[in-house]
Length: 496
Image: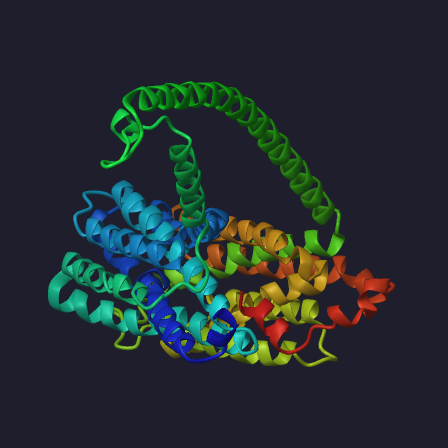
């Protein structure tokens, strides 16, 4: 049944539902730069403290990605998406009643951020289940939902703030997020989730136990019309009770022994799995290219994410625009990011292009754009730099591709989790650090010089530490036919 459902049919309904789910969930968090000046004006707090709202909503989902994936594996994509819809909508609506920035950090930063992480894990998992040969195309369509959502929501939130105020905007956006539950209705599972398999196994064990339980006295009565004498009936009942009592005692001893034995086996298995996981992680961190990539992703996230949150406030602080424009800078960056994802995904498939150095080049170009932001004195210049920075920020789409080429496909999941942790940590720290620089100097110039320097340093570290990888001797596994992944597999890795 599963094989017939792959690469078409209901799978395209899954793609549309997942695309809309990412659009609804990530639309507001990806365009949070429109809300940031409003929060500054409403709460009159420092830019560093207020920036935690936008940094947490983007970073919490990445850091908690292993937990989100475990939830999807155990409960399935549909229940997780429904629950995430409640979280995202509830967090947005609660933010409308926030009395201070600290409450906003919890309601918008943590609650909405975790909900977005659950949506991301659920949509990618269900899409991968329904597609095999066209998996790369399907995942590419689904993941563009975040960029399209950022483009639409940036303009929509701007207009809603003008019409209904900040609180009314958040209430309406939260109500729209409830449509995530409608999207979940289309996510029909192909495979039974782990939680339901465990429930079924427990039900089967209970059924077997009930068959061995002592029957009730009325069940020992013979059917009417039987020719058996009363003495024979009494004797047969006593013998049956004695046999059942003996079986119960033996069954209890055996089940108690088996339970203790099972617990010991589970503990031993978990201990072995944990030690194996730690040793595997230690081996990954011994890989020089892997360590360089983790450092590069951390520094890039630390420096390149703040403009998404702060670029509108930069324009207003420099007096280049009195209020958020009809097409905000966030929208321009979002569309450029969408184009960058597609363009870099095409470039990385070219055989003579080294994916690591392509990633390093995107970091270098993004760092130069960040250094030019304090120099530009026109709104048009900020628009151009937002587009350039957004385009090269599309390198997130080739992150898993680079990891696959660095550590191999068999270790992609674990290595991807490590890299995402570093990326999420950098995203969480970047905007508050830039905000603190402004609170200290009352200018964004030093802050963006710091951000650009971090990104350029990451590009330099990634380039230098991966130079020996070009002369690495190929291992015997590199020539195996089943490891020669092209096209689809590489696309799957690039958008995972």
